[in-house]
Each structure stands twice: as structure tokens, then as C-alpha cells.
Amino acid sequence: MSPTGPASPTPAPPAAGPAPAAAPALPGARRAGYLRQLHQWHWISSAICLMAMLLFSFTGFTLNHAAQIEAKPEVTRLKATLPEPLRAQLEQYALEHVDAEVPLPSELADWANGAFPVEVRGKRAEWSEDDAYIALPRPGGDAWLRIAVDGSAEYERTDRGWISWLNDMHKGRNTGPVWSWFIDIFAIACVVFCITGFLILKYHAANRPSTWPVIGLGIVLPAVIALLFVH
Image (cartoon, rainbow, N blue to C red; front, top):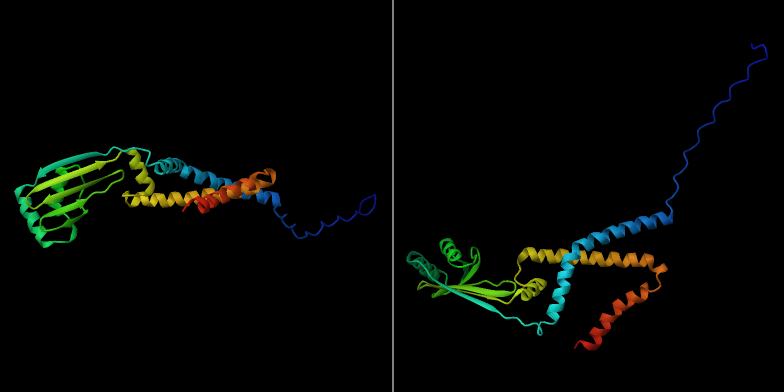
């Protein structure tokens, strides 16, 4: 026992209560996070669209004024003679494939690729008793190759210039599947770019009174022009 009196008991620690619930996210914080996400998708889609958007805008102008933009086609014509062993093979193959559309045999395709500036492996040829005709369409021009059973071969290529080439790239004319896939991806990226831009404008509209009138003009003006002036 202490000389000064009995020892006072040590107070018990308070009982642990339930953990406080997490505070709900503030509306402003959710809005800021959503805007950040929109801005991220907006700049990513704009980066994907940048070069293609410039290209398609320029070619939209050139297509709209195609009659005023003169094109001077350059035509290249070449001739060659099929070696006799291959001529006999061509004649036999033509008789067996009259009115068919099948590629040249590999030996004939190799000869054509060496004799002319073409790549005809795997390309369909139109066969008759007299010849094989291969159409070789290309952006900005045209080409064809004809090999007759008498051994004469002709190649013609038409080049309409780089503006015509860009216009055909715009339309996806004779550009192959890879460019067609690119156009599809570009179109999707443009949709994302436009939708995210619209949503960003919506969030800032309260501080920018001209937002909705300008958006409305962008929607209504093309429709009015189409209804009144396109017949």
C-alpha cells in the first residue's frame, strides 16, 4: 500500500466502435474524373484522325471541284513476244479455260512480271480461245495486260496524276482490303472524336452561352441546305 493512500485504478480504454464509413465522392470530383476521361478519349481519337482528316478534307475539296481541276492522263504502252514453249502452254490453257476467270499459270505469270512492270500472280484473267486479258485497275489510273495465243503481249497503263490518285484513295477505289480496313477504323475514330467533343462542350456550356446555338447551327444548316437546294 502506498503511503499516500490506495492506488487509483487504471481507467479501461474505450471500446472500439465501428469504423467510420468512407465519405461519398463529391459530385465535383466525379465530374472532374469524367471530364478527364472524355479529354483523354478526345485527344487519342484526334491523334488517330489527324493525318487522315487532313487528307480527306483536301480530297473532299478536290472531288467537289473535279470539273475545274484538269487532269492530263499519261498513257504507257509496252509490247513483248511470248517465248515459244510458253506460247504452246498458253494456247492449251486457253482452250481448257474458255470463258473462265482464273489466274495465269505460274510460268506465264513469272514471264509477264519480268516482261512488264506488273504483278499478276494470283490475279484473275478473262480467258477466251484467242487470249488472256487481265484488268489491273489502280488508284489514279488504270492498266491492263493481254497475252494472245499467237505469242503477242500488250500492256497499257494510264496515269491520271496525283490528285486523281488522292481522290481514289478518298473513295477507296481499287485500293485493296488493307486501305479499306483503315477507312473503317478512321470512321470509328471520327465518331469517337465527335461524340467526346460534343460531351465536353456540354459540360462547358454553362460558362459558354454560345455553345448550344453554334451546335444547333451545325446540325440544322446541313439539313436545311440538303432539303432546299439538293434535288
